[in-house]
Length: 305
Length: 286
Image (cartoon, rainbow over all chains, first blue to last red; front, side, top):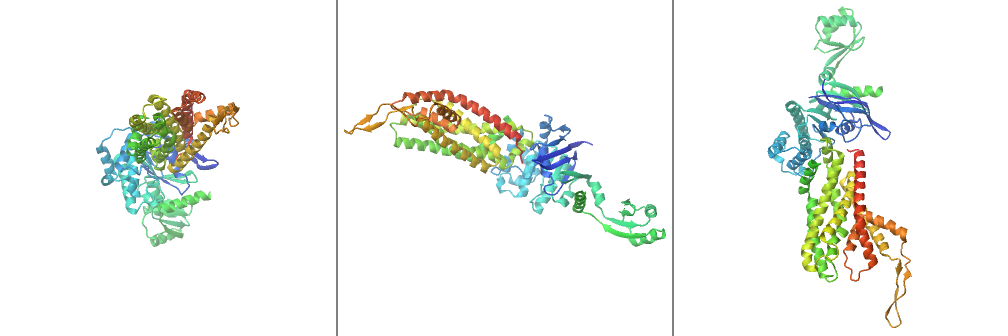
């Protein structure tokens, strides 16, 4: 597995307060990694550390396999772009001028076509001469992404990219992220409070709580965990499994008495069939979890530990 | 570093505060010439008019520029872009300093050029220092002002907070300079004057001046004056003051100041920038 970002027991302390503690995260190359955590969980701090704005108190991280203390990390950072908290752009300058400024900061040669192409990509081609201070929040966010895209980065870090955006803005940013991931193969690390929105784009998730990653999971696995299911409590698990196998019904054994059935079934039919096999259904529930529920259950579990 | 400087120059060309600074400097140069031409035409030296900008206005103008230009990097988040794409913090710090010093030199040269070109016709030629000397001393003072304000702004991380801090620092430096200058003008001995019964002025014999601070205190005051850009601008201004009856004690003092000032200035610039880079490297950015 090739990781563009991995951390090893990363820790960040402010005086005596630990914001991140033994944090381990693995961002696969080409993925869209959704970082989920409540306010104060440490999402932005993690991003600041990765971007080099702050230094870890303990632990380490690697970008593209290069440890952060290695001098070559500067070269790796040139392949990175980031928007932390809000997009960085000079408000008195136009979108075009901001892009020119960033080209100069990176030291890349450019012409007007490069700039137009970028503005076109983020849908700001019609407002290139407009001062950024007159932009809506969504436009600023898209300009921030355009600035971050200069230098053809292969890794973009976006902290709450849809915060404060209207529904139209949310769709624009979402589609832009998907487009960049698909067409340019850019890896994304995105933090967001809008879990349902994140679930529309993320390929991997990291659940952050109290400064620690409590679970890393792929979207496929998460979907499987969240999908519609029938949770039944049975008196004879062995017979129940035998019956489900015979009928080719997909299931997952949760405990000695609890089993999840994922195929569409008729509960009356199953109840009769199982009772004939000396297996009684004590209880059944139809369940379907959203990402939000999954997260809350996970955090609840973590907090109870 | 070159990349950063190119980017900063690009931004400078679009910067309204810089354009405003250039405009104000032009107006001020013309106004100063007009003011002296209508007032002290006979007794004022062109040298003094040239150095007046640095002595009176530059410190506050450049405080405004540095805090706005550099502070905007923080307020509008562009400093993050520079770090994220791999620029070293020391380079970011120095690029900001260099751009501020260049702006300082541009506005000072603009003022000097206007006053020199028009003023030579109105007030005659330079009488104390030559133009190269004035520009050399001015450049050092400009570099110190920019070093101090850049250090404050890079540590304040906010344009408005750093503007307030820079203005307060300027006021403190100006007040301290005024106090020290007054003290340093005191001579060890003084002659008091009084009118005799015929209404004529009579000089008493030399008496010990009670306001003379003493040798050790004078040394301390001198060092502080050497270190303060306001103090250095004051020394330069005094050096350029035409004295109708030059006082040997004062002339010797000013010559000594001018000889020693560059060493103090360069030392101060180097030390403050090392300190600034060290602190900036330690800073936790948001």
